[in-house]
Image (cartoon, rainbow, N blue to C red; front, side, top):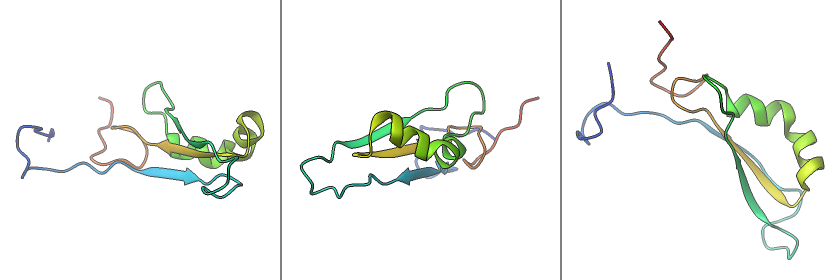
Length: 85
């Protein structure tokens, strides 16, 4: 069953997010805000990407950023999941 965006009372989607907080508090002058990662490619999990690569990413871009990942539609934990036919 597909989502019908013109029917606000219809079926809902659940988009799963994960956040690896910065090593500095948000009130700090060195805090730089969130960076959103999109895994790209078909069915790539941004949640798994952040969980597996969070320390490496924090080293590369700096510890002052929150790292945000999500599972786009059809990926890992986001619902409804649509398998490829």
